[in-house]
Image 1 (cartoon, rainbow, N blue to C red):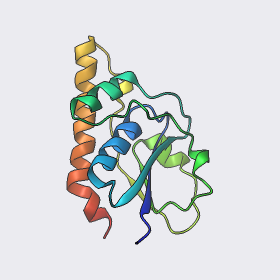
Image 2 (image 1 turned 120 degrees about the vertical axis):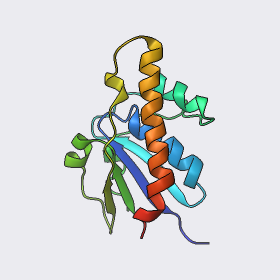
Image 3 (image 1 turned 90 degrees about the vertical axis):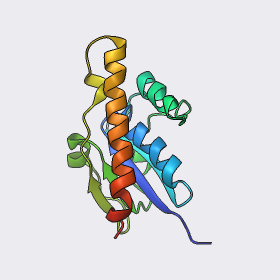
Image 4 (image 1 turned 135 degrees about the horizontal axis):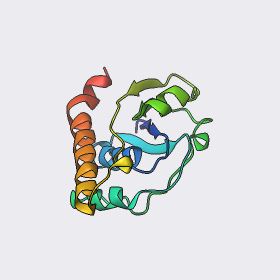
Length: 141
């Protein structure tokens, strides 16, 4: 059996965008890749991210916010940064990792009613899912 390639999704807090991206990528490509997420300054998994992911049938409630330092000694095949801060702070990983930068709005900064904030989380979730559905396999070439 071929060894699965490792994918690390990286953002600053590892609370929203990278957590949703990890869940979506695992749901779509978990048979083909080992997928993880981490942050340059990890915090917690945002409850709204858990809520909106649950709405599409993906459970990230057992995820934890992880530091990128947990992965720096591992060979990572693909590093996807999902915010500008993480893109600038991304360490070098052993081996030949391919860096990909996909910038997504941070829903943690959304303001308004609970429903308006959840709508921002849904918008980002759907944008991330579309990116993986439309662009992921093309980036591998």
